[in-house]
Amino acid sequence: MTKPIIGISTCYEQQGMFNYHQTGEKYITAVINAIDGFPILIPALADKLDSDQLLDTVDGIMLTGSYSNVEPHNYNGNDSKPNTKHDPRRDATILPLITDAVDAGIPLLAICRGFQEMNVAFNGTLHQEIHEVDGKEDHREDASLDLDGQYEFSHSVSIAENGILSHITDNKEEMVNSVHWQGVDELGEGLNIEAVSPDGLIEAASVSKAKNFALGVQWHPEWKVMENLFYKSIFKNFGDACLTHKLENI
Image (cartoon, rainbow, N blue to C red; front, top):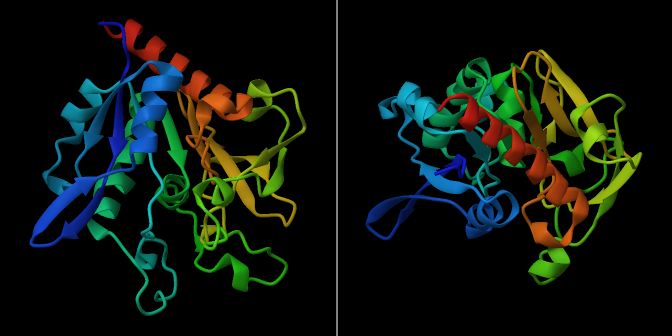
């Protein structure tokens, strides 16, 4: 009964003639293995989701990565290139949920697309094609490699002083994977930089006004989380915050 309940975002997908609300297994197993949490999936129901009841039920929320991108109208961006994958049902579900969760003191861990959602929710903007931005590196994975190769360390990140990550690791730099093509352009209002890549891209941020743990990272700490001390420590701190929230609200 003491396992924290972790709500995990889902993507809205059509497969064949049916619609699905789904997420990657790696996120679910990370919640189970790294924090001994009880995972539940948050359906992408947009305004049909009772967010108040959801926030009364969960002890933490994890926002996952995805092959889809936040629709640019949500941050007054230019139209996406043709054939860009979007998920408006997920946008409509998660963007308002982020600020509601932070206001309610629900711990939040936002990963990859989830981090981009967090930035947009706080009125930030996104680079739609980082590799086309002057001075920025190509942050995409090498599609010719197997999964282990794609999720191998890609570059370092510099850890900001006096942030959440600086209390998670004693190192001034950590190595991370990189499997994304969009990322933070203008940082959202009230967000603090937590980590930056060598080319200056913001790779992690926290919510300054949050009553509880609220961190977004551009890399994928869920990948082989039990084999990486830094990744595991991120989940442990998130899990500790979720468990504390649960015990305080019994």
